View 1 (cartoon, rainbow, N blue to C red):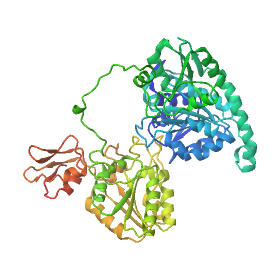
View 2: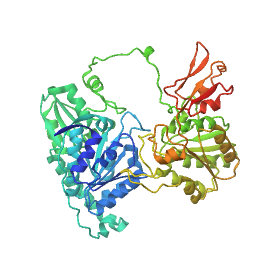
View 3: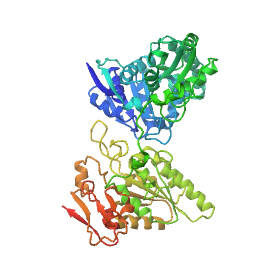
View 4: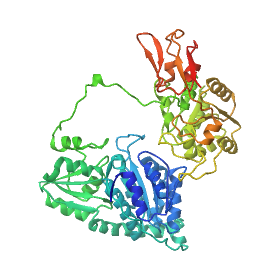
Length: 592
């Protein structure tokens, strides 16, 4: 039976069919749906959210050492977090098959960079597989486990946004019952002390030689003969673009097993064609290795290493053809920048914070990154998960040392705090910092689509879980001044900020209110006043000052004809931030 699946759904299905016992991940676009779909098979396997990618991979390594087939999934920048264990298991190898899915994001659709994680396979000296569509995503995952166990090596399974989220027909199969490999103590394999690492390194190099031989023989790397005037070497979704542009007017070496590269097959293919192109997204990973091996080809001198590819880009770059397309009138395009949702609990906090003067605000990864956008203009920096508190501490220390009178506020979300913010706050407490750290607890992992985290009270599989109490955790770290506020109450937020600014030493403010889009739990309904209500503008009282629009709420607009503010009743959820901001009491609450 064939079913229409995204690449992420297909990976989950492939892991199930391959007999996986344990899976772990931290949610991050474009990888999130892999683990979300694995809970469909929770009768046969365990799927868990981890607080960060390093913990996810380490948990998977432990399950592999125990003899089970295991898989970890994360977005490309998440592999940076997991790089410490990754580079070491390249030496130690595995017991049960181990696959690490790296979902790369060419085009920065939801990421702070567009790094090419294929280099991690080369760096870590492990095998790598790249699917081009959903069917390959499922079948290649199954092959990856076989390769992992055959060669005692982790496999990096590199996907990209288009493969992750595009749909294709997938042939469904049955689950393979894989017996767990009996555990045995192997200190020389798994204790990566220097003496053992020195013995393991030559073994790793020998594996790479055997893996390259396999790469030249496997059907994952296949030749499709067409016209021999043009030869194309490609991988991943770029293969689909090449086929759409060139069709039968070219021959293809389609690479699915991309590290180590099949250099003998590449060399033989190159001799059969007149001109050889390498079509790959982002960096010249294949091209560089080919040229280092003395194989002449054309690649990044014609095809950009910036952003996603598509058939139009390939056709223009290699054939000089401008394909027909629709060209919209730029004057008719309305700008729709991303913004915090109507009723977002972060808006009230940022609106209050934006009024503070002489303040540097270090931000983090999450919905609240939008605190930097118009009209709030609050945040000064966003670098990576957990960086807000660490950067804030460093900036505060530098200002103090040089007699610069600036207060530093670090802003981080609840899930991001659990991810790596805890360590940063320990750093602040230990080193006598003097920052204000704000933990925006919206009771869910918001930006990636409402996944559970250690503070929500539930696991990925829907089981009740210990709910980490953030105030207690913060106090245990050593922070003395800890305040919890409702971020939709502006005066409450302003008072908390004033007290924290006046406090000599590190302080923490926790804003606690559920994401407006959250599927409220019974605990949410019991704790928060979530009655249905709305706000509306009393036109006779409105003076057209536009203060309400400065909250950045998308439900509020300004009528240039009447010079009055308007609130869209279909968008407003009655958070009352605009009501509190209005200096003329021209906004009132309606409803229950």
